[in-house]
Length: 308
Image (tube, rainbow, N blue to C red; front, side):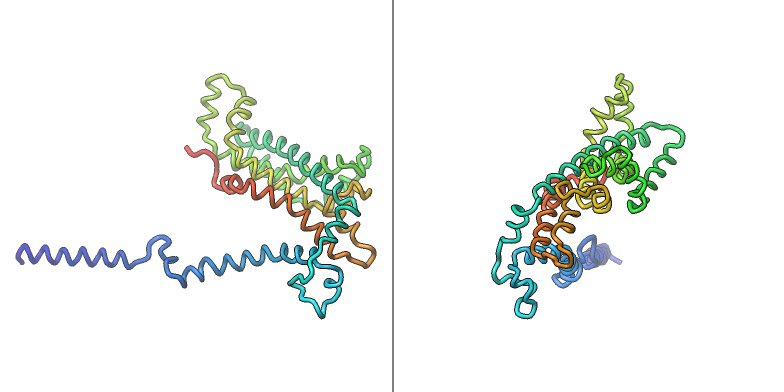
């Protein structure tokens, strides 16, 4: 075989290999075609968006409908609003204690979240960064405490609340909510602290820094995404909590939004659906705003902290 013939065969082989490699899908190339994108991206996202957003649409339409449309099922479309009105919002804000309910809910959620984060940071740092015998066992037991249903804990907690004279006050909720928040926040922060390189802490110890200085000046600044993630979880759980708020609070002006909307806007077997949906819609806005502001930190906390 002559040299030109050998080069030609080699060139055909190389070109055939390159053509074959171009024909084979690599990475995310399977999303290139329009039909593939519809099946794998657009259709699933559309279904998920519809399932998640439809309750908010239903609350909004119900809150904007006058009572005539709400009660006239045969002649009105339940998915559309023909004559929108703000009477339900006016009644909710100016004829009930809804502003006080919102204030109570915000006060309880913020205070309980701060207390839980402070305790969880110290517990997670001690378990994860300070090596002592039984640290893993303690971490596992703390997470198991989160798995205990609140419906079991509220009975002994009610006895304690009565004995200390905290019944029917926001302090009853502020001091009882950390019992269900601290275990999960500690477990979450333990995983985040684990991703911070130990070399940073060892260098600080060699320079004479104390454990408290390391926690405040190194660990906490590097753990801001994890703290925000745990804070969002704790705030959301406090905001939507129902059992403890129903058990420990009896006065109308001291109730939180989830309990007050259900108990104060229902007269016997008469449900004021417009005001109920307006209260639920306004009550969900603070949590939605909180997520929209800190969504980047929340997502980054899922990927870990500082890489070595």
